[in-house]
Image (cartoon, rainbow, N blue to C red; front, side, top):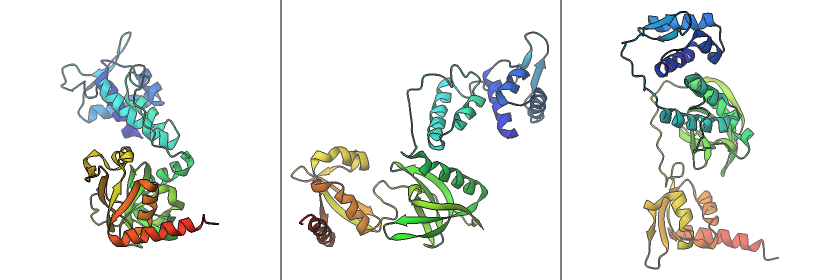
Length: 302
């Protein structure tokens, strides 16, 4: 897009004293004539660009014009590049790295510098989410609804939502938006979605509430329970809830009170801790969990 190219050219001129039209044409994969038209556009926007012919000539911002040439430092560029690389890990392409190359004036020092931070946001099966992310991005940009089949603890069914945010949290990708079936804003896990498609319906024009995330609130937090965990798995409690939520009883066990979406999924979560977790309250959840474990035990008695 032309606006992306204009921003890229301006970023290079802010970092380099002088650059030739041939260099810009090669970097942005366009003709020199296109670059000259872009320079004219930048001039018309109020930023004076001068062009010098002959040996040692080139394009630069007019001397004396007050522009902060340290708009992005090398460290700033590296931070941006780390983020862009993480997006490439999802898409399975080098698209975002190529974008960085376009806005970096010195590829050898910035883009190809040794990177000490690696962020991989991809699922173990990249094909499980990459296509969905691209389609949902398109829907958000075009303000179109999406439809899909969703698999949840309560069963499977068709959903149609107004998507507003793609979110990576709890080690997975989600889409957050307004669900017309539930008449509320909900989160949907991308790996549980099939038959994803753009809908012919447009999103509403109403005000969208701000998305917030409570680390102890699983989706809407319909239920609340207190659980005792063995101190042997403190590492997992810290990992999933944070050190600020670690509280101990008189025996040194860890006590955590948190909310969950529904009782069945809450029981499944507690089962992942095996004998290292015990539901303390409410009493009804203790009894319900005991009945569940007895049903599981019965499968292994023959």
